[in-house]
Length: 325
Ligand SMILES: [Mg+2]
Image (cartoon, rainbow, N blue to C red):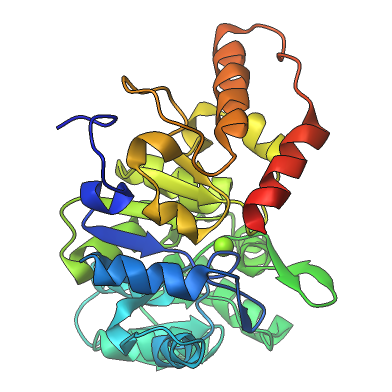
């Protein structure tokens, strides 16, 4: 059956949702409106959920506990972190039981231990690899140890290379900046596990046994691009960092398959949520048909090297605001 010929929802077309957390399920510690009910409805309709995060600092059990507190039915193993995917990359490159220099929050060392590796904190311990993940207390001394080991030829793995982290007080440096310091000092490039790179998606797909997964996220340069890299369609929700202008300006490798205001979009027919046109005409079920049409026009013009078509941003913004209400 092709898209556009189904009366059901997106959930008829995908058996597993690889759901990003920040900006999708929660913002800070609180749930994003409609997220919990929509995910419960998705699970009730038979979708398998994996909560997939680039955040390597928090152990999966802590993330799962947070999700349960928000009202989601979630087991610890439903959470897939970039630290877990990174540890798998390390394990594939070193002998079993090797020492690995762990830089970052507790999630980094825990993920290495879960793979049978031995986390250490000094380059003098002669580690076979270095794994760097975010931690708010990572010091210059820890970065120096990483640089000594990487400079001596240790396998170099980064959980993720997000350049920034939004905090309550503004934008703060993310793991990518810490990794960048070691890269700059040593001239060596790390293997990166997190989105948009493939390892975290691979780990997630295998974890839940997905046959037809859908990436669900709020960022073009991590979630949506990870979908493209791994050949997985994506649903962009407008509850996080991506604004309309960035969406309209997205290069081909960062264009989502579907766009919705929030996670209620999971319950839309696939053809209605889809950005690219489909055979069947769909009524404007969520008020965002205009935004999808604007995306099509802008992307098609960009691909032809034509000038950006006129768009009325305030009108599109008002439509999104209404859809989020
Ligand atoms: Mg996010």
